[in-house]
Length: 104
Image 1 (cartoon, one colour):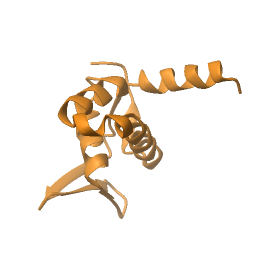
Image 2 (cartoon, one colour; image 1 turned 90 degrees about the vertical axis):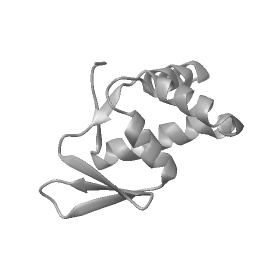
Image 3 (cartoon, one colour; image 1 turned 120 degrees about the vertical axis):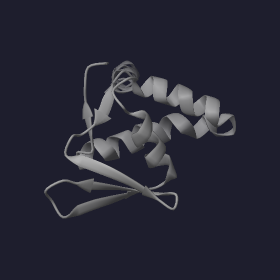
Image 4 (cartoon, helix red, strand yellow; image 1 turned 135 degrees about the horizontal axis):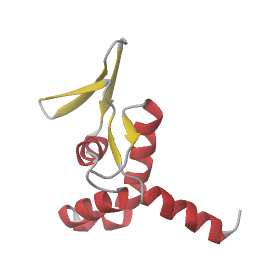
């Protein structure tokens, strides 16, 4: 795979608009976020970064927009935010907690 292909893949990922899957509910308690899969005996504990990504992926913004929002909120973390958002979103997609959607 060439650098050009890799950059195109990265751009495609950043343009994704994600939303909460309808078969997951979330609960926030004492600063901890848990996602529960409805109809299954499954819970996913989100760390602080994943919880922010989950909350911001509401179908109204792309991953690039999520990175921008977090970059403004945490300017000292600029170097790691993009990688954290990509990996967190990929984990939540793999779990089925986030789904690809058209922008609202």
